[in-house]
Image (cartoon, rainbow, N blue to C red; front, side, top):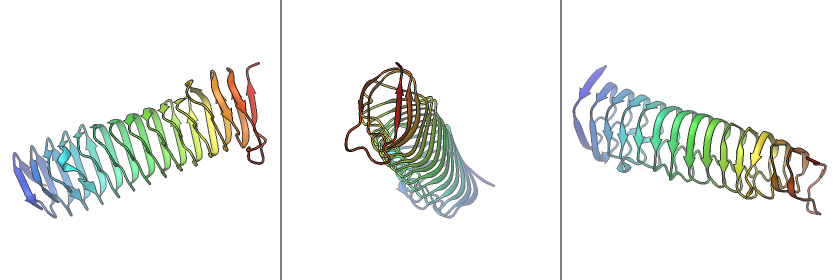
Length: 282
């Protein structure tokens, strides 16, 4: 493997089509497509300022690196990416990629990140200013995660999340096969039009959560007082700890609440089979 250390590059395609290359303490200044069409690349302690760095790259390992805001859209159309201990100030990263493994990284400006990607693993990752995350992604596993950004996981499939705090309205909209464990989910309209959504020991806040869901399961979950009008037009099996503000027109299933429900709304708009059972503490 060729080694390049303490170097600086800029302009168009300075390392185009490189392969079997290790970069140490290298700076990529403003320009475009610096390492495009490459394979088997390692980068350590590097700084990326230009756009479109790792496009069409097959196998790259990035550690202790910094992506400036000007390095937007730097990871697209690539596969087999491993990222460790990086600070990524650039938006619009990870598009149409397969095989993404990210740990101990921070993305404070992550607008429109992770689109149309698959086989994603995140561990100890923080993401902020991050509207429209994980759009149309599938096969995602996340552990120890914090997110601030709306409209996340829309149309995502096959998602498993552990120990997360997700602040996002319209999260998991029309998502499918999602399981979330031991997490906090804050934001209205959670998982509308979803399929096979399972929440285990989670705390949820926000208005009109979990409506129009087909195959909703809640196990030992809790709700904040602002979580109202739950489960409208959903098929649901739920065990809920503590009090609930209001439940409205679930379609089918059983909801068991070991606290009190402030209001149960069952009216002429309930959909068939209209056989949901709501059991509360006497």
